[in-house]
Amino acid sequence: YVYAPSLSHLLLSRDALLAYDILMVNCGSRIEPDSFGAKWPTVVANLRAFLAAGKSIYASDWAFPVLEALYPDVADFIGEDTNVNDVRAGWAPTPTVTATVATATVAAQVGSDHVNVVFDLGGWAVMASATAGAETLIKANIARQCPWNSTSCNSSDLRSLKDAPLTILYRSSSGGKLLYTSFHWEASSTEAM
Image 1 (cartoon, rainbow, N blue to C red):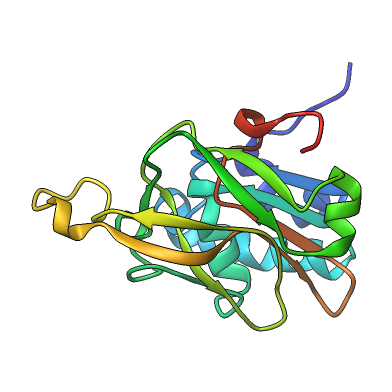
Image 2: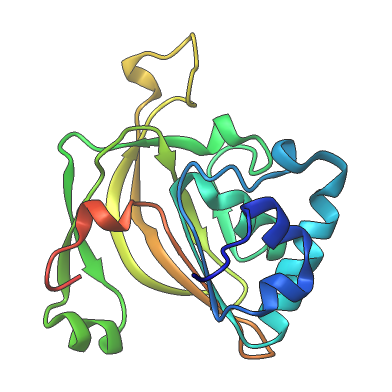
């Protein structure tokens, strides 16, 4: 039997967290300020220590508060980045978007300069751009809608974003890596991806 700590214990205990090499933060995992309240600064400090130790974090979609807390200047999400409902505004007219592979390394790994990305749910977190040393790995022309749960949404609220980052990689100076995707990896898990 292998002991698996609870998520709260893991994130609030630096020693427990450092026992792992990679932390996968799925959409909807609620690793965000509202979930941890006054303990949120401890979670952020432990995640920073995790990356400083050369470890890796993968976060997807609604887990964007992890990226925002660790590196607020790495990605510019649409709307007010600290308001989760502003950021959750992704929309695709069809679930599958043909995306451009933005780096030669990833293109060689997937065997193409284009991949199909599946957005199996609406209201996904939209990055307008990647900044401050982040590497955009996958990008696409997408549409964004009015903010999630908005009561005043209409068709004029749809906006197109050209070459919006869908996957970014940030390498910290200590060797830690943070990979973020706007989409759910399991929905796009083809042999190429």
